[in-house]
Length: 109
Length: 112
Image 1 (cartoon, chains in turn blue, cyan):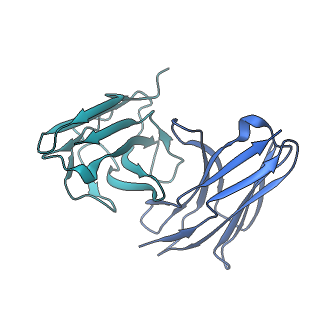
Image 2 (cartoon, each protein chain N blue to C red):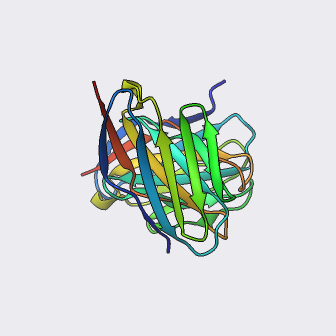
């Protein structure tokens, strides 16, 4: 099976920066995804990393280190609408996605 | 453009009953997936289909079956529901197995 760990909860202030870490151990690796999920809604795709390094997309950036089995999602200039769960998911050697339990981010005014 | 639709939105079901959750996508995606989401456990893959006519087992397939008769539809059947199958069920699709997955709105199922 796969082992994907991420913090359960994080709280930050509007306008601040928050970094959500994800560590993983999988049988084979074909990329790492980050999804955002608002309460009661479906997950939506945020970012994808398959090579080491940083991928930037507006206020969101995602980093991957394959040798360390580590990724983070960086959320900058936090807005109230960023309050959500953030899911780290790893695609294994069989192209199946395994998800972490998710990190609930609460943005306070 | 609807994307992925799921039906019903929610359902309360007596234990032992048979139930089919419906999933339809209009993006002509080849791959489709069923997940269940439980508090503290994240999304877990139940069954998947890489292309029409083929299906495979995921992490938690017991008690569930699927079929993929065409590209658009991927129903999930609980032959005899049990309370441990109380969960939120998400259907997803992707253009291919190497692409990002798009999720439907989910079905909240309660088995009593």
